[in-house]
Amino acid sequence: MGRKTIDRRWLPLNALRAFEGVAKHGSFTAAAHALLISQSALSRHVISLEQLIGVQLFERRPHALTLTKAGQHLLPAVAKSFDRLEYAIDDIRNEGAPAQRTLRVQMPPSFAVQLAVPILRDFRKTSAEVDIDLVSPAAVGPLLADVDVAVVYAKPTVTDLVADLLWPVRLTMLCHPRVAEQHGGKDLAAFIEGNEIVHVRYEGEPRHQAWTQFVRKNGLGALNVERGLVFDTAVLAVQYALSGQGIALVDPRLWREEVRAGRLVSPFAAELDNGYGYYLFTHPEGLADTAIALFRSWLIERFGRDGAAGEPVMQLAVSNDWQVAEGED
Image 1: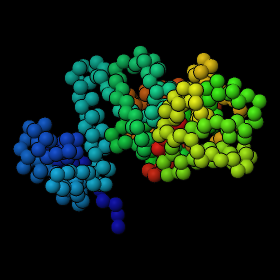
Image 2: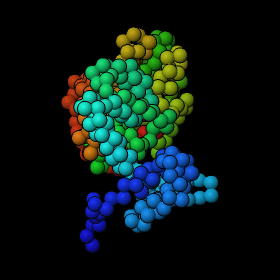
Image 3: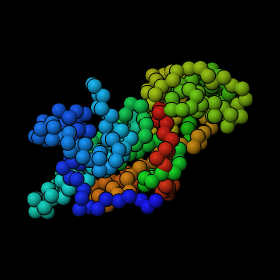
Image 4: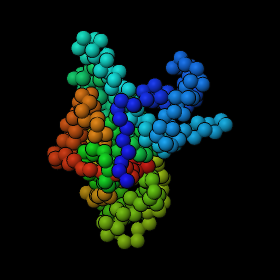
């Protein structure tokens, strides 16, 4: 059976606007007030759209309204399309003056705090017409439906998104210089055994997975690493280490300033490549958007070059089910 397509002439723009409003407000009543139409008219628009598509877009319950899988798939396309129409019309109305554009950007907490936020002012200096709406979920997960660009801590798999590898992660032990001094002269195994271990949580993996892999990779035998504290993000784990306690296994590129200032040290050169990297994800249709293209190029220039210590940026095709760490580095 051939793929079903809809003729552009019959795109139900009012119904799509109604669907976006209900999804945004989570309520037919609130959406009707926002769009200045009756609730019954709004409901008819949404029902007509569902009949056209042939599937339900909302799960309707007595006290809750949630998007179905089909609704989740449709919403970002509708929202982005209306956004672009709005920007284009604003450009024309302003006789070519650059319209203020807001990009919704997703970043892991540690990446945002340590690398991106301190230098976002540099991007704003060169692209003042682009505002940034930065979201950094406490628990890092898949690409949010309504973001334009996302940096994620992930393993490479296959996807229809455009994925740029900013740098592959190699985990290294970091600790307070006092800790290194107190245990100076010990070999790697004795150093780990004599200190509190600080773990970063990874979704879908055992609590102590990174340290277990590190011990195995460096031939440390049956060393016990199933102890210590577990944090959701690397920024929390390193904050604990900065207090003068414990050893953390993290990506040193995020903590270069702390190492340069002597607040953190790496007592051993041993490292772990656990298959993760920092990836920049963009929707393919977003590449034609000037604001998205500007911000993507800026991220690649700043972090693809500096973050990867001079290694070339690799572009991969990475999947809708790519793996993401719950606690990123």
